[in-house]
Image (tube, rainbow, N blue to C red; front, side, top):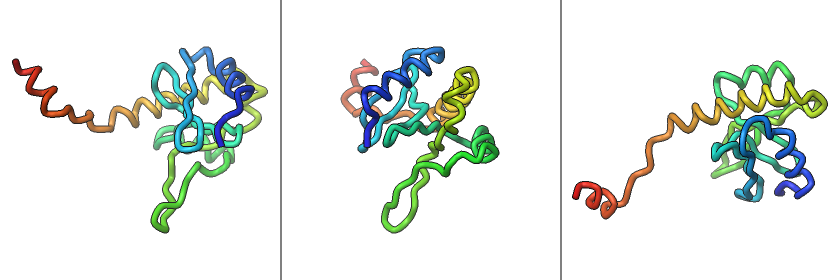
Length: 128
């Protein structure tokens, strides 16, 4: 379920100190982007932040709920987005600190992805 417009506006306001916050529907959920980088996801008006090896332990220590996942061919696929502890919505500075860590994780994940392949026609034009 995607984020309601009210919840989306709330998130844009709360996360504004990070940069330009946009939300986009994706796979029945809502992706949360900062300057084009996906740092979070919303499902059923619940915010999840991107985690990787550098910030996952923080979520475990906070006893955050397990990550978003889905079943595919009988296996559970971890989407690497963990639920944001509710208490952070009462502590805006700490919410932004967690959001910055999620954004950093998103940048690290993006940096590990291979560059998209260009179609042959594009590569040939560049050589000319």
